[in-house]
Image 1: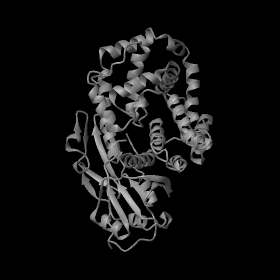
Image 2: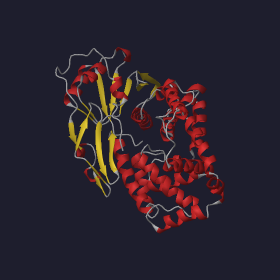
Image 3: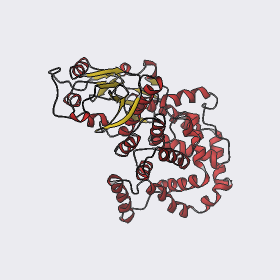
Image 4: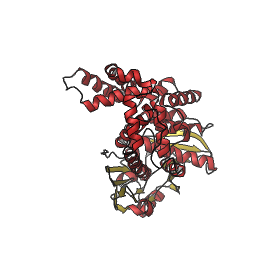
Length: 420
């Protein structure tokens, strides 16, 4: 599974040409041991192994995780944890698909499908035609980047590209059937049993969840995914590890969009910003919900609409995840009483918050920060204003980075990685 290595929004935000006197020699990203960043016991599982050496880009660690299902790449500790859980979930699904109950469900889904899917099975051509509507919905009227994506879809529809393969047609039929038959609820149950994000961008995980869930659901059999049912504690532990809110498993995608849309409207977020937020590609259903929950947890703080606009500007899943983790840091400090925020700020592309003491806190969910020209430039950015500044960071600062921040007048607070 390939991921493109875009630097997180921290990298884009920490650029400036001016920097204060601090360490004279700039550093490069360093190579660390995986055990420097993750518990040693978690680096090996029945289906995966995290490679020992991990490169950093000045802010984030780039992990490579070898599994029985290919090599997964992960940017940052939280994503690495998710990929490890997902590797084990894929193994469970693959083993389930080899069992007798799965075979029976698959047979029954063809020979004796439940009433809800009979019409779709009998009319596959019409089902294929309906499938693209759901996709196009996510690319309408949501800014220039989305417009370009929608244009590409339209171009393909008008092009002379070859007809889709049987596998692609089967996938389209399945998608249409699943949506019409309430398959989404069954898939949420599968994800919950496995303790994974039902809207994960792990393509192999999604394929296996679709295949296994469909056989049980369409065949009218009770859903049983491997050993997860026998040991609910495993799923709970995994869910906590990947940071999926519990209600993600109880509301369908449409129900979640309605729930979060109403919440944002109550915050006085504009209709246009809400529509863009709910349609934008890198923001999966889970990501949108996490952002909404964070803003709900800051009810007296002004400027929440700025964060939605910032979320709408994210261009990659990694950027969105960085924003989500940064908000989670602020929420945790507010809940614990470590801070009392009065406003949320957008600092270029970074989120920030002004506390009641008049300090500007900048959350930085990073892994290992080295003293680079970009970091030095960040410490002297004139658009951050004159208030005292606090970097609230996860991970580790190199000695030079810590010294440079101090020399530039920054206070530093180290916090744990947010639980979600």
